[in-house]
Image (tube, rainbow, N blue to C red):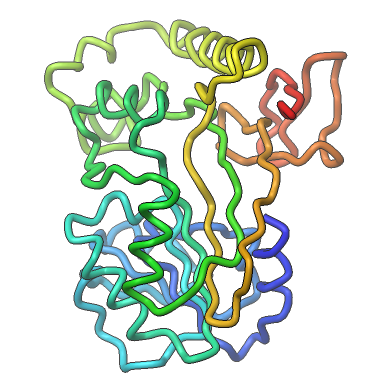
Length: 275
């Protein structure tokens, strides 16, 4: 999001950023060099990051004083909070009067979110958001106004065999969904082929039938002085291996329809935005 990039560039190293529901750290490239305080319930994930201060706490009971942060980030975390409304009120409480907020959320009715919930038996997605519903709830709970929105596209990165293997082989302490445990017995190439198929067919459906099958959700930016919200164009090229979005000008084409992710070097199919 262009507005987010501009806002982060305006922050000084002394200003405080709250990364809410951060895991081991979100938006690491964008927040590098800034003063970040991460909040999560998983102390083990917090301990993995050396780039931020970690606090183990609940999103609806933040252990911070009123008006103590200049910027708050909730990057793909709000849907995991059981009491999202209380978390939103806490965001409004800890933000300074001139503070800003960035939120990324899935759309609850999207094909991607429905597939995620099916594969992971809910996957701790407690909230089902819509664009206008989320913007309204966040605005009411924080007193902020929507400044910009951007459509986010899915890469189906969660369709990965490792998510169905028990630790320490898999990255999750699961497998999470007991009734889907059979997926852990499928070969790795099956998952990679499924990701390719899902990415290509959903984007083709969007282009041919004008659907939103490839939509993941929304990125939303809020401030108190916002006027008319700007709808920024989405980026359909999202890496199937690391989840990084790649803008058209930053794509290094390998062949006519393929590109290498600049973050992880994963090979992906290249898509053009639907206009």
